[in-house]
Amino acid sequence: MFVNTQAVTTDWSIGEEVLSAFCEADTRLVPENIYQWETRIGEFHSIEECEPHWAGIARSRINGSLLEFPIGLGWRRKKAVRYQAEIRHSQTTVHGRWLGGGLSVYAAPHKTLDWLPVFRRACNAMTSTFGLLHYFTPVEDTGRPGTGEGYFSGGIIPSKDMPDRIPNIGWATFLGGEFAKGVPAGQIAEAGFAVETVGDGYLVRITDNINDVADNYPRFSKQRAELKKLFPGDFFLVKDEPISA
Image (cartoon, rainbow, N blue to C red):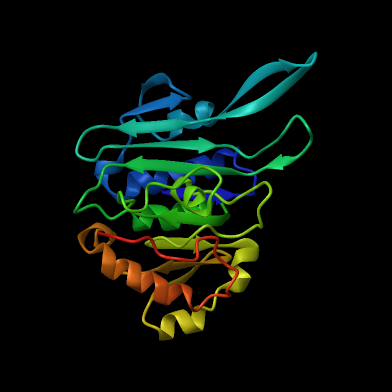
């Protein structure tokens, strides 16, 4: 799961809502331990106790100047459902450029867990521009860095030397901000795909179950190709479906 945003992310109200999305969706998603970078802070006891760690300040001296930047919070669990999540805060770079932030979640496949409520709530809380909830199979998880496929598997929007476009559409995709203007919501619904308004954007889903991606990838791939035909021709970086075995 990836949730990208251009909004400020350091405010604790956002952290509280994002963590609540995990804790309230399913008891199997309640974090076990919290981290900053790879350093374990301790066991997770409550959402409230995470507030001091949500946006800690790091300091670094570059070319004689002291630079301060926010450190994102990470949380993990290994029991029942194995996953790790981390916030990368939006911030101003040393060159004065605004750099958007995001939430990244890597999870082991699970047949009975529904990640959609967490994804929906996180996209809304973070005022997302682009969010991706997808089951990456070996067929897709081979993108080279700097390619459309690579941006897709990394769940990010190109920021340098490429047009500001969505890499590809996943099992569930959130399109907000300027991207929401290109969403043909009516046509998507008429074609039989799930589409709903979330905040200032749209959450589009290809099938009812994320495990459909792995259970029958050729069928999923065909459905995705049909959905992408409804969007403007230059909306996605990845034009063709990968060849599946």
